Amino acid sequence: MHTARVSLVIVAAIVARGASGMVATPARVARAGLRSRSAMRMVATTTTTPGAITPDAITVDQPLRVLVAGGGVGGLMVAKALRQFAGDRVEVTVLERVRDFKLFGGPIQLASNALETIKTVDLELYNKIEAVATFTGDRTCGIKDGIRSEWYAKFDLLTPAASRGMPPTCVVARPDLQAIFLEDLGECVRCGAGVASYERDGVTGVTAIMNDGSKVRGDVLIGADGIWSSVRAKMYGEPMVRGPGATAQYSGYAVFAAETFCDPPDRKETGYKVYIGPEQYFVISDIGGGQMQWYAFVALPEGFIPPTDMLSYIKNRFTKWSPEIHYVLDATKIEEVEQRDLYDRKPMVLRSWVDGPVTLLGDAIHAMMPNLGQGGCQAIEDAHVIAQELSVITSRAEVPNALRRYWGRRLIRSATVQGLSRFASDIIIRGFDTPCKISFTPEFKMENFNYAGVVTRILQPILPIFFWVQFNFLYSGWKNNPVLPESFPPTPGLETDMLD
Image (cartoon, one colour):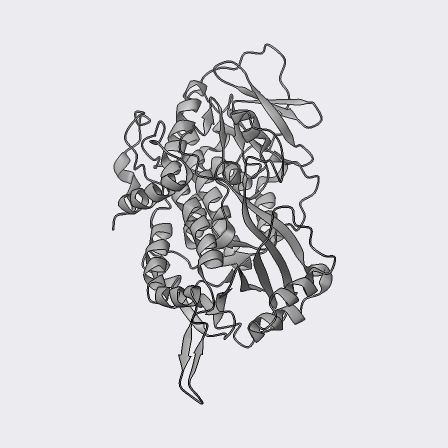
């Protein structure tokens, strides 16, 4: 099935769940034929003299000044892509709140669509990431019975990628990934520079207001500052509230996670295992370097305060579950376990992602549940499209329309992935149970013959079909070719047939 048709079919269900009405102003025409690479001046943007007039034309002498709020994967990627595509015609400054990059959130999964996007931006960057990655998409992955340790359904990550000439899914340690980007971006990343808000400077231009009250002026501001984005709060007039009362919605689940050194017997053969059971599930993945990462997803009320010994709490929650789960738990130290509530957002289909020269990227606009491992991947796709759109304009007056084209190209695909991620989370916790089973030896036995157990068993032969559709959709649409009706003319000088 054609990617656009699959996207439109799936997003209809998502819109029905998250909002009503038709999609707001869409956009047109992807950008290809990108300019050759040139060295980027690594100059930190500073405040400009009040009243200073910025020329409209974008040139090497008067480059487009792009401010990026947030130095996560999406923020670093958009800075890299802009430098790669536009060279000296763009001056990028990444404004990161933290003073030092530290290990946070554990390893990140880069699915095939994200890796292919990175290869398209810069093959050298991809090669550096490949050198430190642990590839799991070429191994056995799937869902297991959380009690009996039996395979319930396997999903094929390799074939949809290999058939398109794409690399398999991998995991990368976050510090390694950050180091690769920071080595390349250098001084254009400013730490200890959190963005609190912004002010638009007339028709073109924007001033970022920093946490310390200072101001930084640019021509574009990209909010890549996460689910609790201050740029988003300003754009939509939302309160800056975390937790209960926030505009982001609590998923109903908390996740407990840890990384531990251990060597399960099936480590070399399996990449990603999901153990299902009633109202909770457990995930184990190889992350390289002799380490395994595990996640325990548990249905809990918002604001739940975990006990000091979270490891014992999880062991008790998963009592009588698979020995494979307790193998990694027994290898874990108490201080290695972390917990956080999971929030996401409904697809933003009725409101623009653009406020003149300001737009949003990644979790700031389409935060999603982690079940598909697509949060960072979709931020990378955002970065690619933004860089394509901004790198081909020749004047500052074109910025708002360039950002609206980015919004139009990313709207349906990101909304679909958001919906799929939430659907996968809900069905695993609320819909799945231990599958019912009939045994004849050594004696006749009927196990878990309740409604949920029977439904879980009935769904077993259907899931591989669903996985096939899901991964083919994810891996086929990474170019984000426009699928919405036309609203804006194509940028002069670009051939649309170069998209294929």
